[in-house]
Length: 289
Ligand code: IYR
Image (cartoon, rainbow, N blue to C red; front, side, top):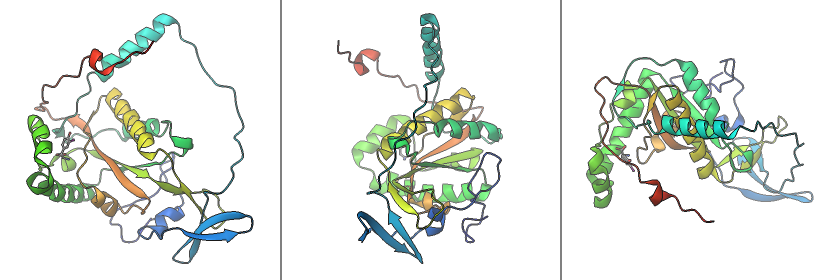
């Protein structure tokens, strides 16, 4: 089922069988996001909003029953194994580099899917999982994203960016040209959801405010990057500024705001990276005993 007949590409929700799933109301509500209207319903106070002909109740005053508790599955590692695994992970992650020059060589979709699954396992405020990952391989959509990003970036580099910001970027040698947005086989666009909708099938749907969204999505992004690196893929953490065009091109509903754009692929044969160093541990670690 298509999320919008206006979309020139498929925007199905995704399930693990790869089939599209039912469209959530949030997709249909799309660009209209009326502000909360307060109303009283019985003893409980709800907020309600009317969008098209659907009344949406907000659930801020709802009480939620406690979850059933289950035994933690925890395997205690031997001390040597702890140290070895931590060191191995450090070794692996210390070789991750942001690259800006990709090969068009295709990447197995399974690796992308596993990375998103890993990211979606990140902890989040009240387990609200306030994220959406949109994976783009469609050439035309990538072209549109590049075009829109370059318009914003040209403006940024030529007018909007304060002098100090440009000075901070100068050593990296970045500019407004973003060919990687078309060349990388996949673009993963992470959206943050400042609010969502209850999954109840009974109407009306309940608007749910999310907590610690920035922190939660940042952690998920870290999981995603770690998984992709572990899978032998290269990534770029790209934040064209502003990023509003991503929601429009990808036809995302109003509650999804672009957070990070991650091109994924193999580095081009001639890829170079700036020789950077990380701060020594003594500068980033304080120990209070
Ligand atoms: N978004 C611009 C500028 C930029 C900003 C930061 I902070 C970087 O670490 C790198 C680039 C761009 O992508 O070129």
